[in-house]
Image (cartoon, rainbow, N blue to C red; front, side):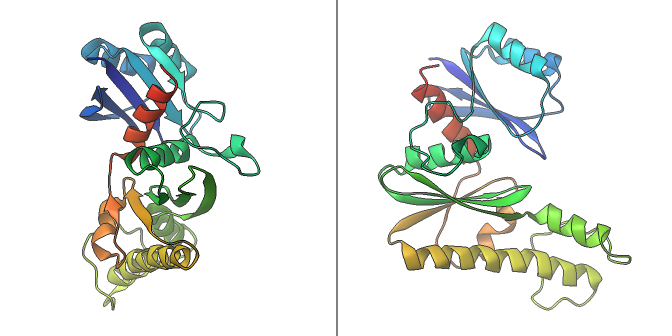
Length: 242
């Protein structure tokens, strides 16, 4: 059975998911995008195919390693994807958004899907049951909010996120935790409620590196999948016959 290397180069982390057929074998966090890093993955796992979704200015020599050793596809606005993008400038849609939406369409075809990515930013993506990606919205992510309060004030400290936090903060740290984490939770629930006024019977899919901080606190029913973007990359790889 063929192996596929699905790479996600995001603003915070570089990751590689390895599939054998449709089964996810392993998920690696890469230290960097140096060619030697990619070469070791190729040598260790011997993938037949590879696909890259990147939202950063990555090392072009890393791509060349994949081109030389695998059937490589770089995800972009000209890729074949299992949905249409009837938006104003489809070329500006981030590769991570394309992959997440592809994952939703692959898991729940012919249904309305709201995909919420929780990473550097909160990214809301809506694809309807006709497989049209209509767009969504973007707002600051968790670490961005913690960092901005520290950097744009004289006295507020840099706070690390924690899963447990009080509604009523009793010191500076817990005030910030409550404000950021509870505030984001209510924002996400509010956006879901707003979509519910416009659409019936849609799935809510939550994904991204910060997902675990919010999934337990949301009142709305969600489908949490930390591997959604990689499943989407695999689906796009297959769709492009790579």
